[in-house]
Length: 146
Image (cartoon, rainbow, N blue to C red):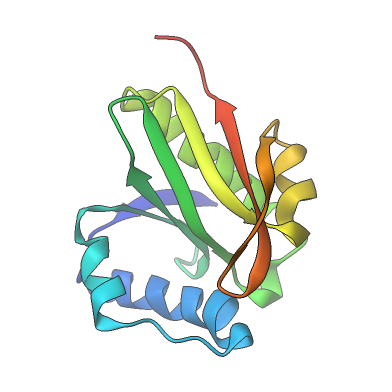
């Protein structure tokens, strides 16, 4: 497995967007809007592939400030779930963040995903809230000191 950065607007980006739609949006009866997609132009898109270059998982990183990235839209293909791929992708995104000078990762985790992130040393911050009609928790992790 390997993780690469995907450029917005490319065929690889379209493939990543389709995976996110299938895993994260359609089950909730949601669709991406043109506005949501256009906002992703300046965001960082990471994708995990197997050696045959089949897309396994993806996520998006948003620059919050000079120290902080927000991880969002983590999606693992249904056939690849429970195999450690999501954990691998998150760890690779943390490496990417550190290599690019960031020291903190934040995210909003669906309540069902909180145990997944806790295993990787993310901490809940604040009270439960509703996002896309389902319960979420804000979570964060300090990556390293500069």
